[in-house]
Amino acid sequence: MSTRRKFIKISALSATFLSGGFQFASAFAGSVKQGKGSKPIVISTWDHGIPANEAAWKILSKNGSALDAVEAGVRVPEADPNVRTVGYGGYPDREGKVTLDACIMDKDSNCGSVAFLQHIKHPISVARRVMEDTPHVMLVGEGALQFALSKGFKKENLLTPESEKDWRNWLQESKYKPVINIENHDTIGMLALDANGDLAGACTTSGAAYKMHGRVGDSPIIGAGLFVDNEVGAATATGLGEAVIRMVGSHLVVELMRQGNSPEDACRLAVERIISKQKDVKDLQVGFIALNKNGEYGGYCIHKGFNYAIQDKSGTKLLDGKSKF
Ligand code: ASP
Image (cartoon, rainbow, N blue to C red; front, side, top):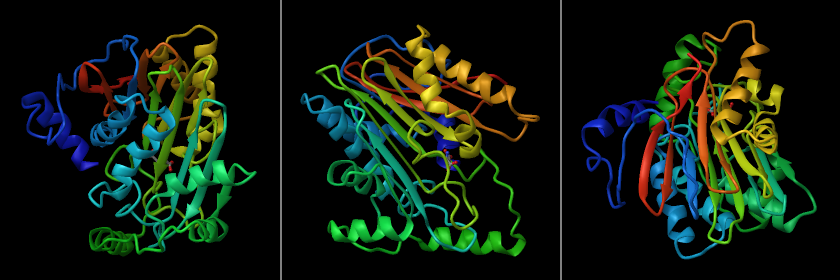
């Protein structure tokens, strides 16, 4: 997405240019070092992770829970019409409908998820209500909408004039080719470790731009787009959801950490597994980030161009994920 690309260029020149109200102890798009352990800490995919982390940090820094932090954090890009890949203002499907996917998971392996949800600006908060107020994990489509309305969420039009214009332009050719890591993707996945040493994660997206109506990606699928095991660590994914679902990517990353791999190595091994099952990865992008129980973190992706944001007591950083190619 263009804001991410701009950020990568600009951040090397001037950390303060985009820093707005939040503090930059350091901000750079350099090569990844294995993240040192600390707590509390929050990490998120892409540059929109920076303001999201800032909202999460307000909670974590006051000894709040990782669960409250990740929900509050990802609500920031969900509400931002300039983030065209999450929530309000997200790119619609090929029929011009904005359909959202989200999930959340806590330290006790409780989880909630919504998929193919329309008209609700904050799918992550609906996912949390599914987790807390129902005996289920996942609600989809009309049922998820009815549930959200019953819980007092407001029905809104999420298609902004900008997204509608882009969709109408796309309609001229209507090429259905999900091109990842170009201009139409970028889920936010967020992982946090709180002062108490507990983990939680959240993941929310408008999914692939101009997807088929009814398409659901990895982001609301527990184990694929997000997984948390409070004994070990947490992981979340971005990129082509179909490739992530096939390998149950985030669960794989957590299991690789359980076997003793560092977060970065676990992400790399999961990326390599995905690559090994594909004939051609030229147009395929997948990235993972992971955070373990000690507050160590890492990220890895197929192709260059993926980055992730970290906030801890030393400040904010934006790191390029290491990549296979
Ligand atoms: N993983 C998301 C999906 O496939 C999109 C993304 O991360 O960019 O829906």
